Image (cartoon, rainbow over all chains, first blue to last red; front, side, top):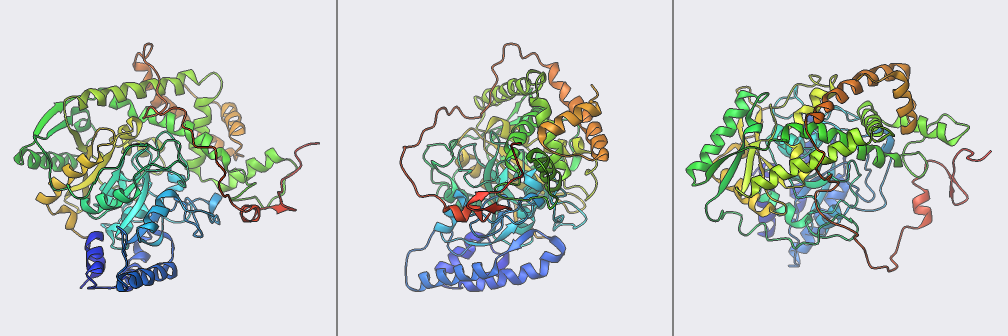
Length: 488
Length: 95
């Protein structure tokens, strides 16, 4: 039996039935990692010793008949901007190259409580700023479907690890598409929950009004399983929503009533790759055959989402990243400075890569005296207009379906010299962050060259349960999620 | 609108980032391009629109004022690149 090809839930079931041991699962997975990692490079650090220790603990629990958690024995990868006690958390930045957090993020604590096995930390664009993984200070992760291509970003490491069977599920963060876009490019299921649904305590902050932790998994059921564990109120995140978490798992196969699916015109217009357009259109036909009604919609202000996002996200980033001063933790220049301001300037010049510098500069520019009204205030108002578009739409439909990205994965190096071109690859994912609604990307086809295509389902605030069901309906009818890259 | 090198230097100073001359040139060009794209927001009339800062309408979130355990001083100081006698060590801040 090839364990690493199974889904997370399959693994858990086999463990509980005692058909396999957690130790076998971990040993098998690490064999796969040693085989695939040299060509994919999804990880920044691996913790085999810690994983085996935890596996033995779970095996002992199981053999003694003790109760085990919801994620019992499932090896999970964690994006390296989520704090793990005692394991380096670098954000793929020189600034935090040697930072070992003294505490676990809320989500890490939760998955540990439910008996997950942490296998390592995955690569990302530095401080989660990027759409291709090329902004990592350490190395570029490659798309397992074709290693000349980027895996997407910023959570490309998590997505590539799941695709290459080097993790059964992964945690990511999504500020403008960093879970959904790499999931689309690598052929995974990636879910960004509602803003406030999952605590960000221990997530290294990028843009605090947009950041949200979510899941990257092999199928929709596994997404429901992981979200069930990490969702819920946490007093340590002041934006955490004190709203009960429904049971995502048990009703996942039952879409109730007449499903009304909104199809926004603006997401199918200029700039959309033909193969992506065709795949999503075919997917919509599958919903129609299953009794759903397709409703033509307009979200008229979504064309302004990228411009709005790059004001708000950079403004917030420039404030959040002011904490990296070389004093309390992180990089400190070897060159001595006579005064503290010069020290800060040198620490930050040495510690940050160019995309991070670019965004801090842009953020401070749009917030600076004389420009605040023209940029930040203007963007905050357009954000209201975009939110209004979605409120109007959700009065008419249950969910909205669009492509996740305007194109499939692009080649390494293709967009790295043109930041604006890179920013536009997040055109369809950014609105959900600005509005705070949940979105899930699921595989819905392949290009003629064999690259995965993703479809996005967006729902109302706190209706993760519904979009998971809508996603599962499609998955039950198709086998795109079961395809594996050939080179592996 | 073109950004000048002087504006780049000013915002780099605000950002506490030392830039090389090459970086100043590249960032001047790139930021000019990005801000040019952002100009498209001016197509929209937003005079009567309320700005929004957050996606949910949470306000004044309080936690019970009770004592909780925290990290030991030494544990935190060990994360610092430079510390001495129980303090973080930095260059002189007062003349």
